[in-house]
Length: 81
Image (cartoon, rainbow, N blue to C red; front, side, top):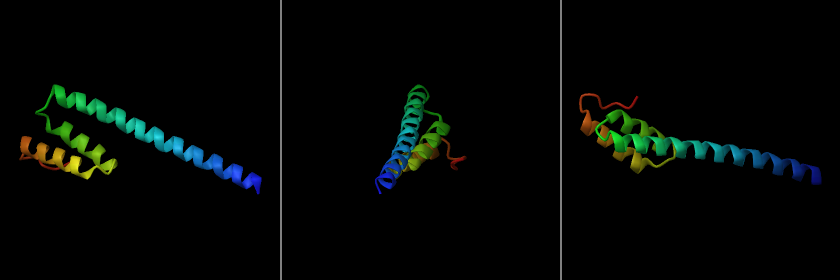
């Protein structure tokens, strides 16, 4: 029984590390996109890219804000790719 507890604890630890790694990577990508948007605030593709990451993080209000900004900047190409 102790062995089962030990193995289940180890398994959960790996999942937590993987989830943390994904979250850390996402934060780095978002930070990079934020810098790119600051440098080029009229590029709708950057807003579309950031919206995808916000959706991945379930931050739908922020994603919608970026989608709307992208559409405003480029009304002829409103789709997120």
